[in-house]
Amino acid sequence: MSRSNTPQGKSSFLTGYLILLAMPLLLAMLTLYIVSKLHYQDTIEQKLVSINHALSLAEGDIHRQLVRALGTSITADKIIPIAQSDKSKKYYRDIWRDQVKQNDLLSVIFYANSSGEWFSSDDQQDFRFSIEHNSNAVDPRTRVWFKGAEAVPGNYYWSPPYEDALTHRMTITVARLIDHHDGTSYGVVGADIDLPAWSQRLDAMLSRDNALQHLLLNRASNRILVHSNPNRIGLLFAPSWSNQLVGTTGSFYSSDEDEFVAYSTVPARPELLAITIQLRRDKAALRYGTMVLVVTILTGTLFVLAAIIFRLKIERLIATLLQTVKQLRVMSQEEQLSHLDKIHLPEAHVLKQEISIVSEQLKASFERMNRDPLTGLYNRHSLNEKLARLHETDSDYVMAIIDIDNFKSINDTHGHATGDAVLRRISTLGQQLLGDRASLYRFGGEELIAIFEDMSLELARLTMDEWREIASTLTWREVGMQISFSSGIGRRNGLSQEAFFVLVDGALYRAKHAGKNRITSVDDYDDPAPTEQE
Image (tube, rainbow, N blue to C red):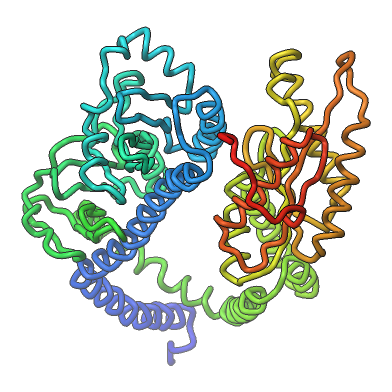
């Protein structure tokens, strides 16, 4: 009697079939394991090169942001020279405080002249420094950053890392010489960079992989400027493989340190080297390799059966999502959400929620970066970007510079809280009246700037006059207080950004000189505007 149809026979056939099915799977896993082992180094190095390149670009972007922060003061110095006068100190401290608030890497911005006088963005910190360190005995002209800026006129000087005397945090100073062109005086504008904060930003970027390290090395001094471990800032850099850091970019594996290394120079800063390091971790893979292979063999059959069941669903889902992502790349946010509503997949609502959340976060971040926290208007950073775009496209536009009359007297008489309230209320009124017809910015202190892109000079002036007249009739809580503002206005007519600003600023000065509470156009006069010295 044949036993081929007995339960034992069927079971034996199934066991043999599963073994035959498992053998090619086992062979494939062994082959994959060996190939992965052989190509492990290439894979890690390629990953490190990619990560290090991205971090190097980020470092370069940070350096450009820091340079732009000083560039704002250098540009402004051509209009309102930096000096030790109370007016100059207040003007530049207002600008510098905004810059420090907007960039967490900036500790303080300061100015020192050729006579040894100095002041910074933080008047309270200046006072503490004077008390704790006897600032009268400290001559800024002897500091490394001052001498360095003197040695490279027209360029930015980056100091070696050092411990700040007041905060005791590691810092570097970026500085640039300002020549006042009077034949005798000059000064240096500088900014202290918070290296621990910079390092903590790096550490946060690498927090998902604790085997990764990243640092910024100054090749000239061979010292670490920034490190994902802040405790290593300022230390000498001397690993066994340092002699392999040749050229501007590269990658290698160090058997002595058992780690992979990728490096590249920072854009526009060839003396700085961005280095990313990862410890070799395939020893753990070798230790657990046998267990992984055993588990793979035992679960192989179930995997094959599950793959057959879910293959069609997965392929359909992937194809649908891939097509959706391709379409979303060219759609606005409203179109994206509408498109996702039409997709009949259980996973689509999750994708819709994620896109909406990310979009809102990006929008909120953009608003925080480009808005003045006191008035809610666009800030000076946003103004600079707007003017740069207008001049890059050679656009013709109308600009008005607004200055609240007697603002210092308001602060002195009623206090800074009242001054802030005046700024907010005048700004809100301007937003309501100008609406979409103009973009309104806070330039600094009590000065605002309005940009009219699609309006004639005559109509823009009438609009500004309406704002001025309503502002002058506002009722205030403070008894007897009346608020007005003066403004200069003009059309660009092909002028450079700097020349146009000087022209409109001159018209503002005429308005102030003529009695305040008025709008003066650059076209009202043929002769040059008088200066404050006149």
